[in-house]
Length: 332
Image 1 (tube, rainbow, N blue to C red):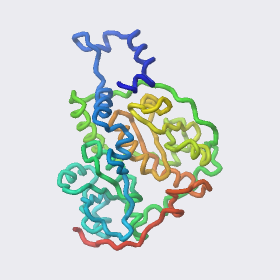
Image 2 (image 1 turned 30 degrees about the horizontal axis):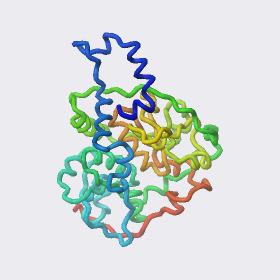
Image 3 (image 1 turned 90 degrees about the vertical axis):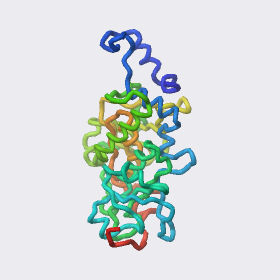
Image 4 (image 1 turned 45 degrees about the vertical axis):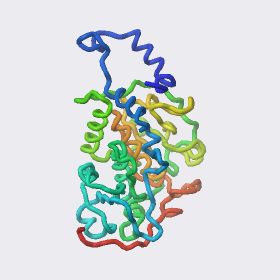
């Protein structure tokens, strides 16, 4: 699988050659095909490795902040909150759609899609899936409706310092990376393009998969945890005990030091956390599509250690707060 094998899969491939048996072959004696491997090859071929979902080929990130004047133009706005919350307050021009129907609504879009939720996290999960489905310029509203107005703020009640003084909070060095087999799943499709379509639709049907910060912090050994921070912040903020630091994380690593998907343990629940739960939502959606059982740690470091002195950006209640923009209060 291109550089994936060159960098991290060579020993596994050799082992497979040495111990191949009939159970691994098709009826005609040919090696069994893993749809996950076919899908990952396809994603590399179409330039949709994880880094190009986080930031597309035009350099556009998966999120956009609210405009300074509170007026959004040139976007097809999909609000995936409840009908009740939507009716009480929403952005001008938005349409209310259940998360599981985002692909149906996306087909109606003639402008780039902007997904809106309560906190930005579910919208980021949806945006990742939309980009994989072909809507490469889809974005999420950063911080969700919490960024729009204090009256729709769902973020402030969620910030916390669960990690401060906790026995499972560490300032130790990064654990050594290990190499694992690729995940496996079954598929009715055989081509990379069709497997991708089928997997995105399946992941959407399963809803947003999350993990609570308190649960992961209490029993970190129950999970494979990836702290999606740079090296400096991994040490300065501290991290959940045993958390890996796989950034960048790619199917086809660009540099030898980059992490590969084969550094993820497919036998474990994969929990990714970042500063806000928004980047980790994008990553978790992607990992679920390619076959991992992946969860985004909700509210990220803002839930774990909001009062930490190392924040420079993305701290809710610090540099990031609600605006005071107007909104519509009808059902249209």
